[in-house]
Amino acid sequence: DGGITQSPKYLFRKEGQNVTLSCEQNLNHDAMYWYRQDPGQGLRLIYYSQIVNDFQKGDIAEGYSVSREKKESFPLTVTSAQKNPTAFYLCASSTGTGAHYGYTFGSGTRLTVV
Amino acid sequence: GENVEQHPSTLSVQEGDSAVIKCTYSDSASNYFPWYKQELGKGPQLIIDIRSNVGEKKDQRIAVTLNKTAKHFSLHITETQPEDSAVYFCAPPQKLVFGQGTRLTINP
Image 1 (cartoon, chains in turn purple, green):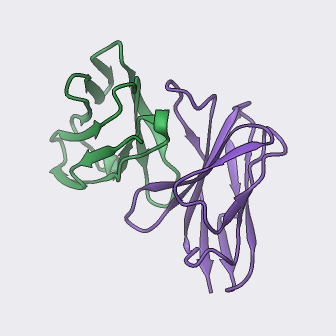
Image 2 (cartoon, one colour):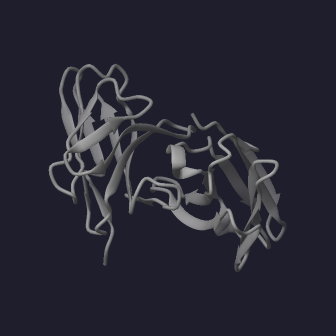
Image 3 (spheres, helix red, strand yellow):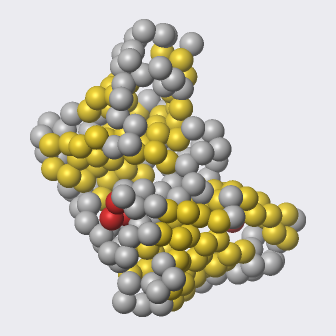
């Protein structure tokens, strides 16, 4: 079955460490996204990519980095520069970033700084 | 950029009653209007969507209505059941922005 897979489901990070969250899709979707969700809050866009080897910053890109070397993969690195990284991270994909495309979301990664 | 406002932020209804959530947007160019449901600890899931050339779409107990003149679209859930308890998000994806979400609780 086609879908979008995020791993790991839970991740613990020590202060000062970089961590990378994985996101893989086999839906042949061109666009991929990373959102951050804090408890009781909505979704805030971190980065998005419309095509391989290209990506754009979202509203809260500071302290994060991404790459898009393959169509299927869009990993997110949370760097030590991100001051408050504890959150639920959601990856999504869509057939395009135009006006007619719904998102398919992964099941999320819960990151906790210890 | 796009400004999306979703109301109410929380909604509690008795099982069997109806629930309505409204989303107001600012970009008149928006022409695709989806609703997502997020259960606890999971990613959101697209449950229904509507395009700008229609005013209403139904899928069993859920429906979405669109008022382009007033720039709002609404999610309607009838005959609510306990499994409808979740957080619901609206999103006009043209600008990649989501509403703040509505926490819907169905009371038995």
